[in-house]
Figure 1: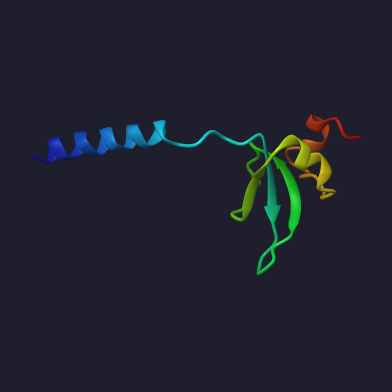
Figure 2: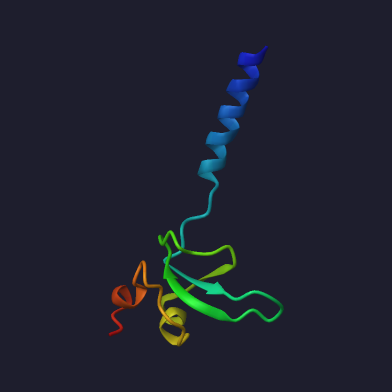
Length: 81
């Protein structure tokens, strides 16, 4: 009985991995509160992305005028000096 439940849970977890959305190329981190403003641009793979963030396009990452993350250095990847 338990083995059947465990097999079902494993199958459900494996299906969940297939449905996960792809990782964005660029992310903007937002400030706290109503009318949250962009605070930092990250590469999509950065470990320092906070909980409040939005996926953005390359053009938006270049146009935001927001500081770049010091950990993942998206400005280098974007070609901004």
